[in-house]
Length: 359
Image (cartoon, rainbow, N blue to C red):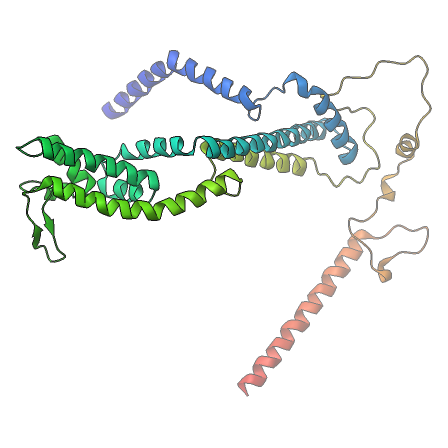
């Protein structure tokens, strides 16, 4: 009981904190993000209203809804189709922007990525150093740090400070459990024997620089290819903005499929119910003189449910005589029986083959 009471009090405090300015700020930020591209907004911007009305009419005439629920589903599907097209246009502009930045600001963006990666050097030195060694700008970042350590060893007779030793250990990806009681510049072979002593930190740092320069020459070729692919829009490595757009588009496609499935798009009617209209389209103004009825309206008035066609194509032996309606349940049962006999014959043939193999 005490634990439950404490948990209730903690939940109450969290709910009070979440209802403060931080939550309101998050709501405002979410609304601004939704209005930025309009993909998550529940309200359509004014300049798209004409397109929404046209698309709603097209979907309405195509799927022929027969009740208010179907009308709502068709309106949602029309709206989703417009948002999908907008998402595709935005993605095209974002990819153009990525190609332009690859041409004008490639080195700047790669250096920024290196700085972000290098933040985790002290926390996870092994993975961070390997990630930096695999890129041109990462090798340059490592070379610059070793150059600072070499210069510090030249001007400091007492050697590296504790912070400088810690940086050298991180650049070497030395595990934290093996740093106490030893110098960073001590090199060992595969069997743990000392190769070079700890008397020349500057020389050790410059040997590291020489090795990184060789890796930089190799990584420069890869960097040149990656930049060329990005400039020509031939790479599929999306930015966070592209990945977010694709998530929105995937959700819109799911909503579109769900709406059309709920509306049962295989309508047996020749025209929509005259009393229904798309929600996005305004009602027409009343006219003084009634217009003559169209062929679709006359067909709707004379519509007879017994004239419904079966939901599948009839075989020649299933077509009823003229003036008679097809017996759909009987045809379906006949088809099931025919399929069962066919499957049974196939299974019997397989059993005979197995018996021959066993004999």
